Amino acid sequence: MGDLVRSLGIVLVLVAVVVLLVARHDSPPKTVDAAPLLVAARSDAGFAVVDPAGAPDGWRLTSARYLPTSSETGAQWHLGWETEAETYAAVDQGVRPAADVVTELVRDATRTGDGTGAWSGWAHWAGSRPGWQAYTIETGDAPGHGTVVLYGSSTDEQLLELRAALGLAGLTAG
Image 1 (cartoon, one colour):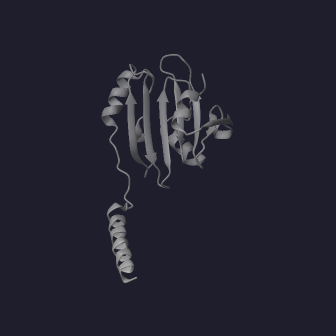
Image 2 (tube, one colour):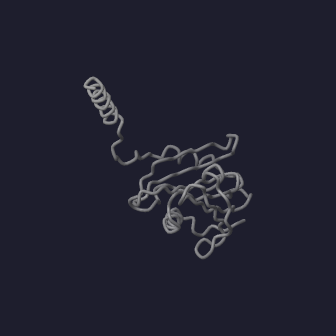
Image 3 (cartoon, helix red, strand yellow):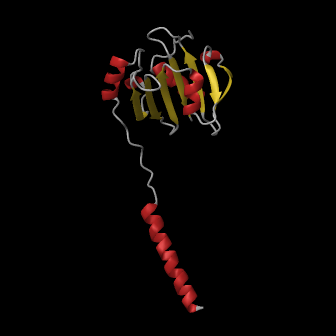
């Protein structure tokens, strides 16, 4: 019985060491600099890309991507932030139909209807993960137009704040 207790003690000590070595510390996510990508996107995209500098105060830009016009999907601009409330909010702009884009961005997204009030003209989508949602608008096929998707685990109010801060409040469907 003594050998069993000693062996169990050794195993517990090893497990504790592994847990301490692997345990994650609560550190803020790394921020990214979108400036080089912004330059490329503005010169190539064919639509007016939003500037991340317009984001609400206290939000941290944690992701930025640009796929050029020559990519399989056409030009696509992505910016994502961690909000002060530690939720995620993002904007994607591109030339593909909203339904194609939002189903890639928000897992199992289902269109729930048209936005109302401040979201009038935008389509609302709900994801399968609790709290995940998206709003989409297609501004037309003419040069300078495309699809805008605002999404994340953020509240309607946070997404509205982002929409206003990035100068997207006046968009109309085309």
